[in-house]
Length: 166
Image (cartoon, rainbow, N blue to C red; front, side, top):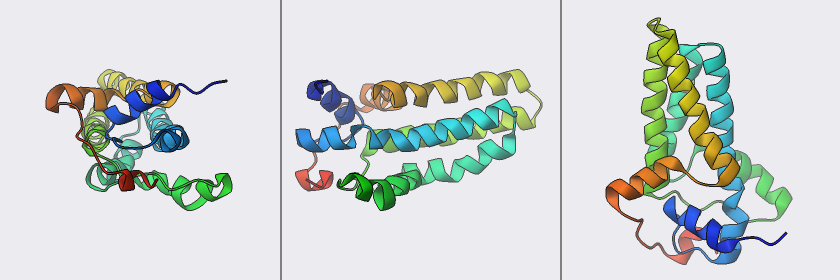
């Protein structure tokens, strides 16, 4: 199976990973989906159980993904899996990817509030959306919040090759 580097480049540059060479993009394409996948599973459990507590417990991790240059769940790859795979660490997050984490932080707060307040149907609707958005990223590589960021603020600027670790 041939890798479609153009598609990968388009999707990852929209998330702020600009200036990476093709080899780096191919290597980070799937590992960058690990943190959204873990968050998606956590949200799915919290939504299934209608648990404000579970959703709010995820908020600090999402918030850290918004303010740091990476998501805490990237540590599973950066300090473990990458050594098994013989690859470089993930590059630092740009503004579009951090924007996605910020959006999810607020979304988790409102979804948790809905469950806590007894507005269960709203909680399930918001929780469902909070599952579908990362599911799109995990399965296709397309990040909806990064796309919205691009619409609001323009395409991400260029970064140096050093930001990609290659």
